[in-house]
Length: 365
Image 1 (cartoon, one colour):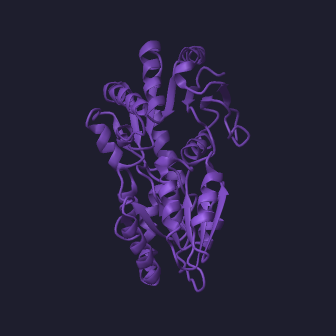
Image 2 (tube, one colour):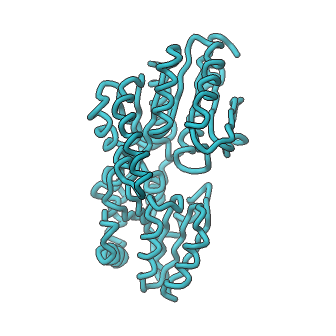
Image 3 (cartoon, rainbow, N blue to C red):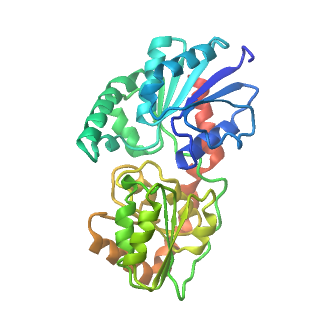
């Protein structure tokens, strides 16, 4: 390692295929290898390790939780930091950010850039008493340790305001590097089928169960594409097969690295998350000229949808959701025409803009 290089240590527990990992992957490939020694610390396997365009040192720790390997990560960071006078940890999400800040407080010679890709409200939404206790403790550490981070980047204005309630001076906002380029507006037409696409992990916080129940109430000709992996994929397949209308065809495609093919086939993206950051699928859908229907939930949905790109709905009100789907279908030509003005909005999500903004922050730390 060269002494004049910056050691960038990326602590990303689950470096698996998906939106948050894509953002980090794009930043790594953007950075100049002559200026940075890049190190990744993750739990289990880094699913991007064959995709990097430069040498990256990857530490795959065969454990399920950061708490099980904290001291091992501490030693890795300590050893890496010996090779340079400039060492920066970039971490993602609440729990990794808390551990990264603790490492800084112990080692002293490391700076921290925390990235928050979902809203703090997530820590107030729980599924069991044990989940409540875990999130209560984590929320305590977030509120009391974030002020020790050198910089905190939120990917939405909503979460920036949340964090500024307890860590005002070091927090800023950068949208993620979602798009390579902005596509021209092209009107979508439908005759026989009005097609719907859903993108995300098949997890309960993404509202996949509610989405499956919702589409089983649809009674017009439609092809519905569900793009995302998860342990309960077979369960949802069986549920849909049993309850859906014969007019509707549903395809559970698993994780798709490039969703553009399915955006081109579809007319409407539906997002059913209980909370969100800056959802990449919403931005990709708008870029592909889809109208969007998204939950009116804490996080980034409101600022991504605004007045032109879609409608918000209440996930717990199935009748309202069905009425809005029908309204969109019947008025699609008028509603889709609002997307013509997308270019100015989507410029915020271009890869080079986002990555340059991150590089500027990294150079300032």
